[in-house]
Image 1: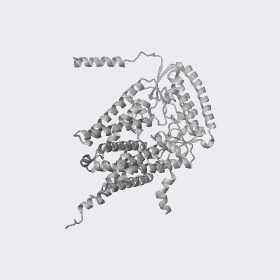
Image 2: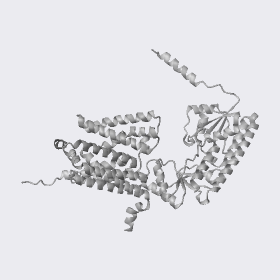
Image 3: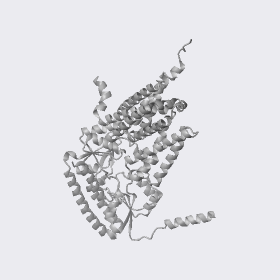
Image 4: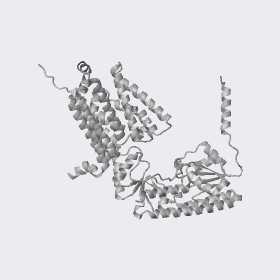
Length: 291
Length: 298
């Protein structure tokens, strides 16, 4: 028992930064893993990486207005990310263009704009590097930010749950019975941007994007039902966070990559053993019931 | 339309215009020092009789300097060379040979008893002798003798300048010792990634402890952070000066968890530019002792 305690609990009991990191990853798990599930179902799994670039012009304008202030830069990034996400969503709904293509167009233009603003401003500081945090350095303010974003996300998801689920699986049906699809979509994109930008600021891009998408992909192999999928995704994100921090504590692998690598191992295992479309279940599908 | 010949002519003319050197007074002795701190000492001894330039300028790193053709030209024009020695300027011999310079070379650390330092697990001679003011006085004497030998008519001026500067260095050493004395004895230790303060620590009774197992300036692992925190707690270190941990929030977390203060910028191997806090040797020592005092007095 004492050995188990020393290995599994003691690092968190001894070091405050480990407790803070754990709290941060858990909060992130509850907020962004459900969003990751919806993103996956809507085939928007790569939006996180696009968003990491799309926020540059906002961060740059924030920097020009008030110098190296994390608050101004994160605020600017949030606005830029919001414009890109909602703009792409609106164009995808009103034109023939698919959402991923319109998002690609928006984020590339945004990135170019950001690089231009940075060079006009005459700085060679890597603004994004400055803006992106690390999980080992969560102060009270940053923790509070993640937790409030998570809380808002959960309430908002509960509110738009039905139209969002319908829209994700059968948008045409939803359009025929209700007009809630559009507002739900915009609200959802807002949540995506909030979670991503908050996550970048607190934990860095890799951890924010990785712990949003990988648990969702893992969950896809274990459940067909969307509610179960979300439960599994949240659990996967939390377990990866805990195990990843321990790996980083014992092996000297940087913490962000360690957490994502643990999630990656879970993903590999799910690909092989997952009961919903995993490799083994595909090869040996079992008997079909016959009449 | 511009022809190619015209274009070449225009460019040549422009180059000549930009590149033509301003007319210079012939009487000044041209001295080249290897790095900025040395150049400042040379300037104080030579005064207006010499014209000194540093190969490695302010904020530059003399350890990893790679000379350019322009530097070889500077060296070739020098009448006196001043180097630190003790293995600091590994590139100097080759540069001097390549430039064909016949100028006499003054080794400023001549007569100083070198300390050893550990680098990558091996014992090496520590070249950062100037961090002790007693050694800096030896530097000044060596520079004075070297300049006088190369330029005998001005020997009296060099002797007078050096004497005046030595008085200032004595005063500086008194200030440093007084400042250290004001810090409680059990507070005279910091963790730092700088490895240049061996002579300073030995001369003035200050422990500069290097953090264990911190190898990178990329994203740190939980293991490294935990190790630093444990070390600070166990050794009861009151302040950390670690500039190569790039994320300021991480420094704050370490500081919050251990109660150790975060120190400011220490200058060790190079001066700052003219606007900076360490534009000369004396200002550099003032800056460092001020930063140490701020962090350790509590």
